[in-house]
Length: 344
Length: 30
Image (cartoon, rainbow over all chains, first blue to last red; front, top):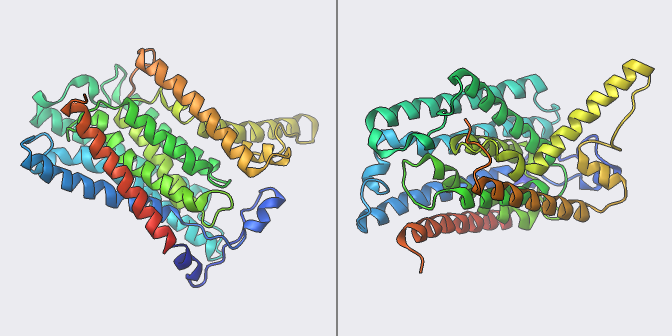
């Protein structure tokens, strides 16, 4: 894939703008590696789901997991919505990466945001629709507590918050992806966290384990990607990967009603996003007040602040991974004792 | 011993993790 990306005609893989000078040597490294991550994850997800359905049917597990179950349209929402959300964002990211690599400067920020909002809305409408289908056709098969949008706030409010979560997290991962191996390594952690919290049953209709079912292959693909993306990276995931992984993270949190757990398992993503917001806000504020814009960090997002402080890329990435691991452990502990409410 | 209810998802998700890892690794080295 790397050789193929390098051979693509008319593509110029230049280093990212607004990065420390050490990043200039990254010029020539192809992006769009997210195609591989999402491709591998989707192939594995559908392959294993289909094979599993046949095996479960033969083993007598029946409707809930078998072929008969997978063929019922009422089940499709739970099966397809998460991969759909990831693929839609990957397509948007691909358009952006392609535009950058062909020298057209990438999609306009407004266009990209609009694309994210449309994709996230389609996903959320799908979730609400699938809920209605399941509750109408198979009310006895699901427990109300596991269904998204059964939190005691009005639907429009929960929907809006969920939309903000998906768009926000996909941008947060996009911002975090700017240093070798960081976003991919954190995504492996996220996948494992979803596996830990999900109910350990393979039942197609279970919203709660739909995240684990898709995040298992996604984490596997990210781990495989790390072979090539670790320092010094031979390929980057690009927006194709980061937007898709971020959207899959936000969407999985909505499907499993674990939005309050998100700031823990995606701790570094949130910190990186807030570092950019703080930097911009402080710069604008000080410029307005004293005529000269001041900065809090040497450069935002935060990983560049440490790099400019003399840390190696490897050290930054290992530190951020460790911090996220600790935050994830705290989050999972809080989750298991039931302090964090289920939302939406 | 692991019960069916626990073993089944671990095998299912474990296989999908490994398959995705292998597919990605194979694609990357092409």
